[in-house]
Length: 129
Image 1 (cartoon, rainbow, N blue to C red):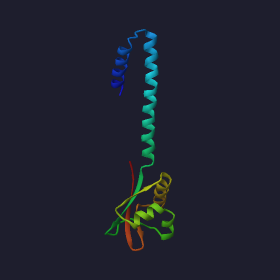
Image 2 (image 1 turned 45 degrees about the horizontal axis):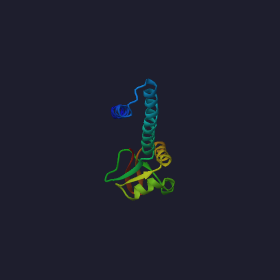
Image 3 (image 1 turned 90 degrees about the vertical axis):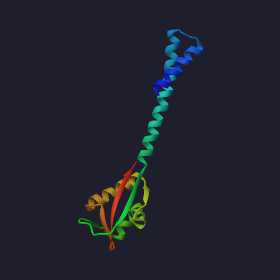
Image 4 (image 1 turned 30 degrees about the horizontal axis):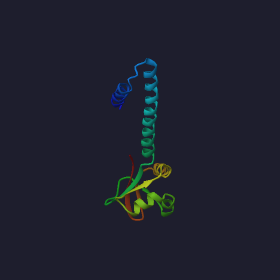
């Protein structure tokens, strides 16, 4: 990025044919500040996308895990994305950061990510970009 900036800056100076130190300093500051602001905006946008790139997946297990917790239908109703993931095992479902954290906290309090609902066993995965 700075190499390209340097090349464009040098070309601009050659085209303008202005060689005074004051002009060069002003041109440098005036062109560098917007470049840094644009770069900061791209980084902020990337961080925002990362913050909201959270998903939950449930996989149905064909065996009884060594450790699991029982989750009732009433508890499941409080976590809509977890419920959708269990209703469609193997698919990722996007979750907003608050619900994603709440669901992780819920399963941490329960003590495991392997859960039993009815007669079925599931393992829950939490992903982020």
